Length: 159
Image (tube, rainbow, N blue to C red; front, side, top):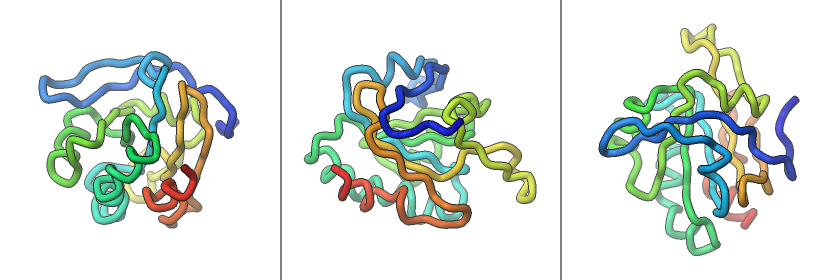
């Protein structure tokens, strides 16, 4: 079953990429008490993700925060080291990277995809959501190969 607006996020372990290395976090604790703009990409350093998706959130970070977003979170089925390196290369301090290395988060959300044809294995679909105190208030899932409704610009229109 795919998560929907009004649903509470599943409680799974994610790994936060920090300056001091990986830090395990529980999603139920991490998303509690704040408004989060969350975006998910099929993989760090992949073409659309690096050229458009993450840079859009970097560019629109101040506007998102001005509209009440407490934190901007990016996630992918990659390890915390890759997510941290990707944020250093393309992102900014305005973005928090949460690694979903075992695809537990996207599995629990019902938003996996099979990237085996590209040598990627199981990955998360491209999507974004607004999460308020652990509850999904907006959900934007892309059609395969598309990039429009999960963008920072689209999310700004939802706030």
